[in-house]
Length: 108
Length: 113
Image 1 (tube, chains in turn purple, red):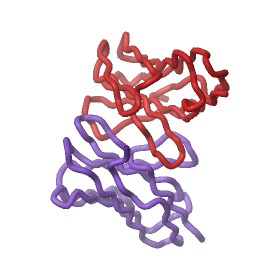
Image 2: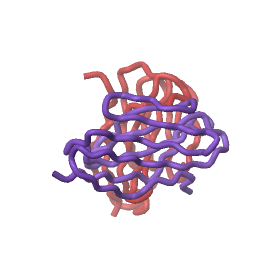
Image 3: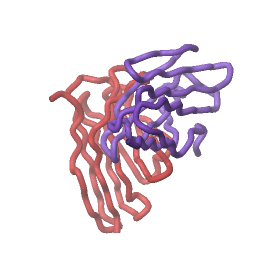
Image 4: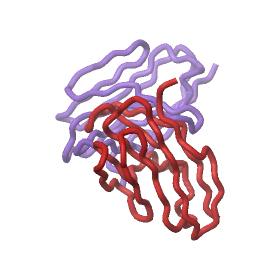
């Protein structure tokens, strides 16, 4: 069953900031990944955090707190093209287990 | 363009039939994976291979089998399809076992009637 929790939907306007939280169970944990998927297409890799702290890649940042079993993806300066599903994935025992995904809708 | 190729893109199949989904990568990645994606459930791991010649079971392996005869190919076989196997199937690869960065194919949409 699912051992990751993330919100199912988020809606925001262009230019806004969105934070998608992800909580997970800790057994066999090695790191937290984030993926983006447009309209059922191929998921694409965004970021990976193995250690605590913030990783920044352009408008997207990802954070991990191992002590809190918690991470988040931060989407800044939202654009219409950011409308997609976003998945957190736990690297557990060297395999990725995905959350159910968060649908982000960006409005003009 | 280098990457992962899946075939077929879409298939309708009668229950009880055998089906093989093909997956080929040209990145010389060591590890390969098969996931299924169902609405509201995210991506669930079916089988994986951490290197050519070895395979392992993921979260939902029942009714599926895989083989890894070489680095590039990782076919997924449904021996006797059932309607609950209606799903979108994604093949993925990573350059090393345990990597958090997977590269996904475009998916194979399978409908079992």
